[in-house]
Image 1 (cartoon, rainbow, N blue to C red):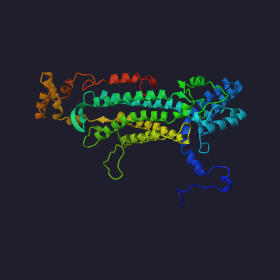
Image 2: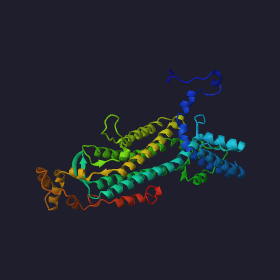
Image 3: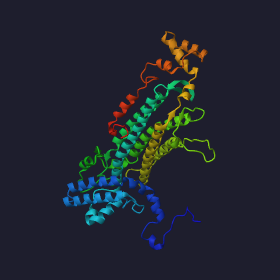
Image 4: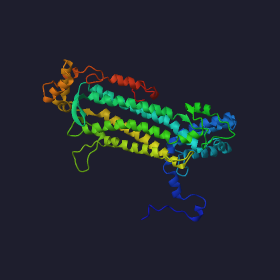
Length: 448
């Protein structure tokens, strides 16, 4: 049986010309897989860079046109699966340059002038983040729409509200759903802000100390690529590496933290002891030994994803710590932490949205759980409205917690006058708030 802990070896001839396999595995890791995602954005960044090279005379008009055509071919080959990023390539930059050199010869060898892998990867990553964060934002919008729809289906369904997991006061299914919906819209502000924060061009910083002799048109290239600005001082580019990634994941953690609590509620409400909801069969599993089981696995995994994101955030917080200025290979690890966090967030949002769209609240169970003691606060405040001091009314209500008070939904809801409380839910207000998130470029359905 092979020893999996023993590093692979090569013969003497190979060892003199190439790193051992284990060195390649160690230094590249799974980075090449993430670069398969980033390659189209690397091509886009390359288009901006060669335009700049043409502008300063490093490329002629014809050379520029030839490289553009070759980049079209590279993209077509990538999309058809003819080319990809392999471990031996290490990254998408190598693939693109090799393909251009193979197609164009010495012209392909010119395109790396004035840049480094260090600013290349950040340019591709930040272009990718613009799309990835917007996509996640649209997914959040889809979940908000689903929650608003759930509220609209249950405008007057009573259920207990809880504090300390003890029954506290009456609530409604609509109020429960809209509380999460409004919080998620607030979380979108964090995503919008961080998308703007990272939308700065690193191109022209090269390895971190600028480009001598070549006066690259950094601002014009940035504008051409859709960046809002450049990082003016080239040394700031590598100092921001890890910080930008951490900011993105922090925004994701805030948003997935809301989804985590939503999933926890639904898991609890689906228990036999509560019986408030019936989860869609397609998003539950059975047991290998207990025929009666209907397990909320999709929600449990979605809930657990929060811990994974917090772990990635912690990794991003400590990875750059204590590093001197400039680039260090340690920083390569920030890419995987960021990309995993984005992918996990997308998966969780898809999963939980599907569950919310298919969940059914059992009105008989939710209203049966609204026992008379939930009306104690109502009875106290009814006396306050008649002029009794709150403390006196509070003591009187505490004497008889099961005192007379109607639990008819219409009667309970009629006692509230403040918008946003029971019977005064406003799903349309949440939808307006969502529509104001113009950066999502939402279509009519709200799911972009």
